[in-house]
Picture: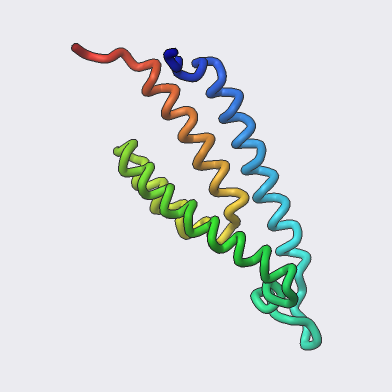
Amino acid sequence: MSVSPPAAGRAPVAAAVYFALSAVGAVGTWYFNLRFTPTPDAPSYLEGWFANPASSSAAVDVIVVACVACIFYVREARRLGGRWLLLAAALVPLTFVIALAFTFPLFLGLREIALRQQRAAPTGS
């Protein structure tokens, strides 16, 4: 039983889905970030992450996945080479400044396109 590579036509669809989710992630997170108004009576932004057990669970979940995603950016960038290292260098801080919900699907969409281009490139013998 042989396993065939993914269909070449699927990468653009997957990339488009990743890019759409990246946009939703940026807009969705920043909508709430901009609505947050610190007051003397309310917890700070980071205190809000750990305000109760439910938010603490979600915060730890996001923090761990963000760290794993950053490791993935760097490792995959080294494997893909070239400008990918610059992309990883930009995405690591942007993960924590903008949102993981923005940078992770963005990286995956760009990766889909790069992998499709690699598969389509003629191989020299």
